[in-house]
Length: 145
Image (cartoon, rainbow, N blue to C red; front, side, top):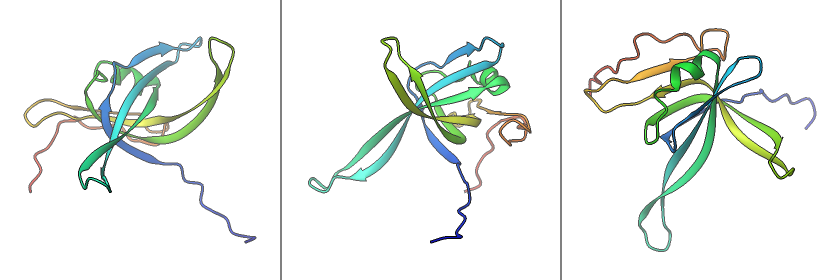
């Protein structure tokens, strides 16, 4: 088909758990970069046994600037998290000189979840950096159902 223009959409929302403590780095220019590895589960029914099982997917999420600095203390192993962002591919050279490629989620919002009765927080990029507006208090509200 000619003349068909597809919308250019690259948005994803993932929920899962942090698989190891996040790592905060600073670029040579002093920009903060936080890498948060997460595991995302999907429930699938095994066609042979009929049992429900978890199909787990692992992906690195990357936060930059203020979002990275605000999230570093909350991104601990086992923490439940929701990440909103976009998928990005990049190439790099590993220590042995091999060219590698990786897919990661560049976050514009990270929300760390907590059990009812405990504190939780939302970390978002300021308006203009990823399109999210700053969060309010970040406290969980009781759901009315």
